[in-house]
Image (cartoon, rainbow, N blue to C red; front, side, top):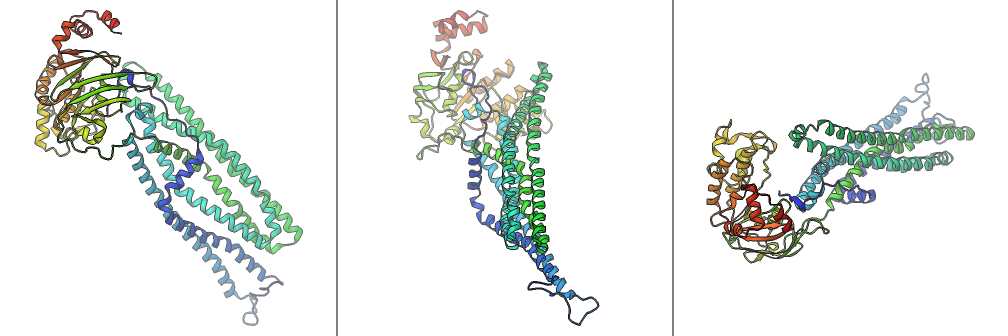
Length: 618
């Protein structure tokens, strides 16, 4: 993917800090609509499980009341004559305790099934979310990637999605279970003893207040933790990519200091977020103990001993939802922080879609370009290309030269629709570029960039990337045409030789030859060469130039070059400066004009200072 050069490129800017947690929560709920049936099953299973949990103390209360001298079940377990030595009907007693055991086991089984379904849902959702992020990246405009570090973009699809996926099942089960258990226990407590229930209920406002205060303060640290994680990944990724440059300029210590600074900030955020979240648990335990004391006092005053034992179990279950939510509060906050960042990305404005009737074929493309009043800038406050007019006939070879930042690469980026023009129009064979689908337009173009891009894989597959249907013979033919066959034949495995990421296990010049072969095999109707031979030696450049001359026949070709020797035979040379075409003509015509091009040529080959000419052009 092409990147803007010079004046068109912005500095990297970190991803904006997410701010709206309610929106993230609402977005998560909307995302789970396809799973609503399974979520209802989870809810139903957990409700039944919690009903069993609530029935256990009630059953225990009935058993205890059976040993008393009052109530409907008084003397229920006492035998008449059959077993006077023991005095109890053990069969009835075992049956009642068996019911309690069945309720406990059955509730655990149902809870386990609900947990299994939740894990399946979270795994499927993570898979779906990663696909959505990948699809989003494919549809974002190139300008978006100019503004955001790659490390942060990678962190979104890895750390943030993992944070959501690994915790969603736990959050869903815990929240549903806690809410239903809380409501059920509250009802049961009032059934057993309304006076003791009011004592337990008195601790509820304090529990809610502590949870709110702790969560509000720890959330800021969780957001910062996620942000620093992305920064750290971006820093490490950049250092690995530029390891040679770091070592060349002896910047290891500086880079290490930067790493330590970000890592230290990340560690502090992690500490405070975890510490503040963990504060919920002891706070809830303290409040729960206050409830226990209050219940014991009231039960003693009212002499309600039978209700006390089951009520203490209820009281423990009553505080359990707060314990559970307190324990996962850090998980909830990490998930919401990750969800905010993910949904912020998914809400980013995508590149304009192709028009409904856009041409999806390039069979009739011949390569006639017409620029009319084209204006473009990367930022509204800094103009780059202004009112550009240009006509290119089919089969013409157009060379574009000029100083760094003049707008040379920007011009071809507009041809490829990597960026959309602000005003004016660009037509291909009389049809506006916006009336072609992007895929049809880009299938028509073969592009060789100054910055080579190769992926980890065999040389054969890297060349075939330009044409997936190419045969092995066509791969070899393309490599031969690009003067790459000889060096490939010397490698272990030849065309099956596996390149490292970015092809770092071969030389820069060899990487360039492979990218040229990749462009050749695509059989393009339009060719763009952006300093395509800048990384090869002069002898190889001459050999490649001979091949290129053959390839460029009957193809419209745009050549961006600083080596002016490579463009002498171009049919037209465009000299660009600060986004404007200031001179046009052939090599000989421009030399005769003794203008900006002549000054560039003389500076390159004759060593003549061209600063005067540059100043005059400005």
